[in-house]
Image 1 (cartoon, rainbow, N blue to C red):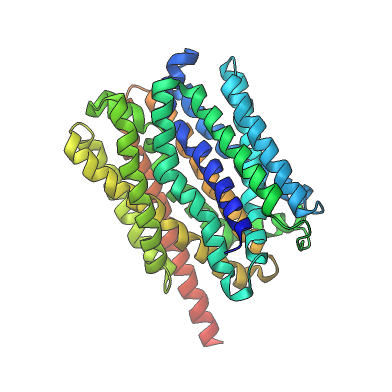
Image 2 (image 1 turned 45 degrees about the vertical axis):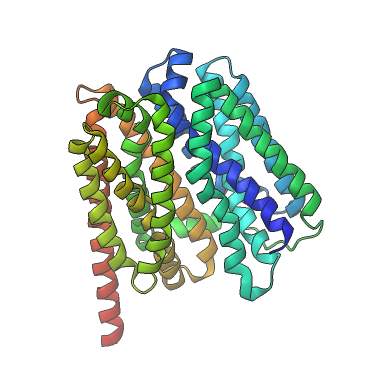
Length: 393
């Protein structure tokens, strides 16, 4: 792989760390800023919403900018956002800082994947994109627990300083290694995106993505306080448990891709069913340390196992219903993932703030995943009906 790919991988690592590390730091941030846990949870929602709405709009607006200056500008925005988060004197300033980082996140992955593909021969494009996204996976396995550990020892602001430092390294790597001239595809405008949103079949899959992926975040957003207040783990143990969770995510992502290769709908039905059941079980095992660890390993495996199937299914349906906008449909599904994170984190905060409290977040998440399961069954039935109609014709 060209060295420029590794510069993109470092940037993806930094971005992945800043997105998810806040989950392990919620109790620390809430105590330091003197806010409630539900308000701290909104930090997750606001970031995800920034990616959801910032990615398609900013990608359309920046389509005519040369690729290398655009990436450098995005990393500059990322560094500024995390520096502002580290310096933020109040909760409100922290929210604004997170939105700035989220804007960089959304456009980076949209543009970075096409750049990675253009840096290698055609027969290695998938591997190049996978190498870049490996930074995101490794961030979940190592960056999040390490960042959590740093935040618990030196304060959560130190974590954001460290992430800003990673951004500086990525900026330098991109400046030094990325070619000055890169091909630029015709930008997808907002009208192209609206046409995709006009497809009822694709809207069903976007809803499957938001509910199925977001269901886990009802509980995952508040995992640190659940582990400390309900299970009884120490704050220092949380970072180690996040390593276990991250490793399960990495394995689940690979396994999910394999089982979804031939029939993504069939795979998604099974994965969503298991995911809903494990979330329901977590409601009962959260009070005991060993059962909690087993349940979290299963939940980590399942929470990202549906991602390859959902992306593949969107591409398949886009080719059938919106053949001229397959890339736009794929990008909007990424937005749907982040909309699910925002929905799950917000709903989790509402549950925590209610009389039911932290212990109810897993089974509420199970309800969201069950809704995704029903939509998947419906979508599969529509596929069979369309196939039968074509055969009859």
